[in-house]
Amino acid sequence: MIKILKTAEFDEWFEKLRIKEQAQVE
Image 1: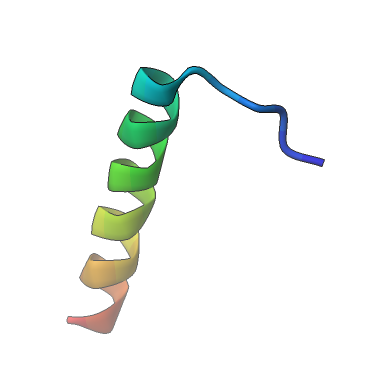
Image 2: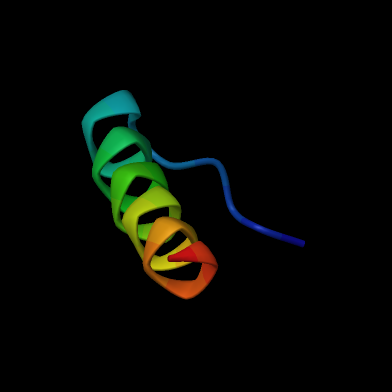
């Protein structure tokens, strides 16, 4: 299970993940 992170940490991780996915799509 993924540990619950602080909002700031989660936002940073999510943004990196989203950018990574976008790079794969393009």
